[in-house]
Every structure is written in structure tokens, then in C-alpha cells.
Length: 54
Image (tube, rainbow, N blue to C red; front, side, top):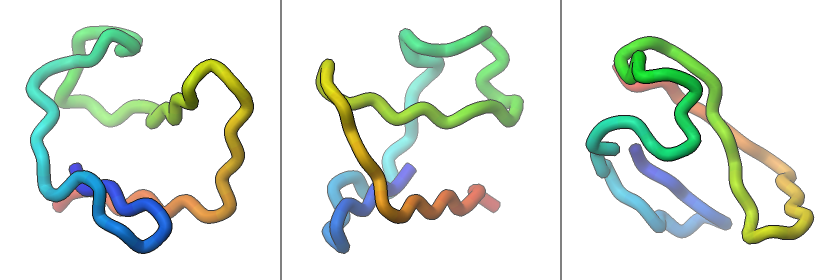
């Protein structure tokens, strides 16, 4: 996973080792939803681009 926020890369090519606490099920190899989490308050996004891994 690579995450870019406001043009700055904050996470670069990092693997997520296993499922996270918010996972819907344990099928980590299957496509599924992407969630965005704020810090217990409202958040807004202007432009989100998701590029699937090849």
C-alpha cells in the first residue's frame, strides 16, 4: 500500500500483514471495501484515487 496525502507520500509500498481489526471477514486475499477512519470526529475528502495492485 502507498498513501499520498496532499501530494506528500506518507506510506510507501508497505505490506499490510494480515487482516486489520475492522475486517469484515478473514478472506484477506479477496477484493473488498476500503474504509477511511478519522479521529473520532467529522472528516472530509475532496479527491480520492484508488489504484488496484497489479
